[in-house]
Image (tube, rainbow, N blue to C red):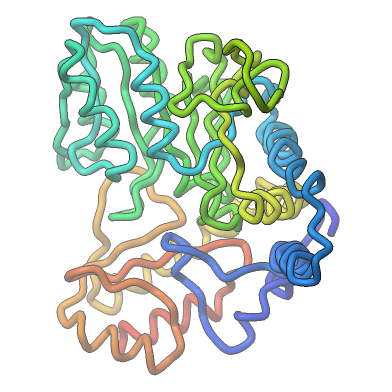
Length: 366
């Protein structure tokens, strides 16, 4: 793999794509060969009694450094998590009791919604902002005031694919001295936020979607690591790394929030981030947005109305008149996409191509 890898070369790493169209990465993608090979090697060694405990244990901290390098942030700012819910709950539990406000979209993904609701008994007011016809960005901006302590938002929600304008939110949040928590699970891997402009106080990412990690490998990135309180302090949270007895002295940086890693998840995550680091990020974003735009225009021509307002992303949801018929045609055409209620949702990664768009549009045109 090189930094000039093409979509065609990337697609060749996914054997599942030989006989099917995969547009369901918003749920989960097929496994790329470098990741499944790393997992197969580990499972085979385990089966054969050649389990390398030290090697398996090193995968998680190695993935921390690879992810930090991928994002361009200090490794000391990266905590190893198992989910976005754990990341949000860690931040929520670390905030001081205060008569302040948490602002969050009413239709947020529950892993980035429910942890903040636990702050009510500690004096926080939770403002759940309904989406307006102008989009989530405008709705959230209108809810920010001098009482705001934190705004929690997903850059992209898979319910409709709208991309929130993080730069505008950052400016409004900074103006009132608040903090920004961003869930980038449905964006990172395709979209590249300008971290120098957005400056998220907390960035949470679960890697099992657009980063091709196994489920159970997630990250929390924050410069406020000295304020964090681990939800489940253990031998992994300490400075000395000892196993038995002794005082609780938390590790420096966000490592204080680490828990015992699920070995296979992090073995796969390390291989996945190494793979992602070789992709040309600007070309990935441009490629995926172009495919999404092509699908969106074709869907309109086929009579399927795109759902969502605001900035578009690599995820598209369109309203369909006959969900069951669309579901049957997807199955018959071996097209993997989600029918959710009265809408069809598709998502485009770097391995997708124009033929995949055509296959999806054929389903709608039928």
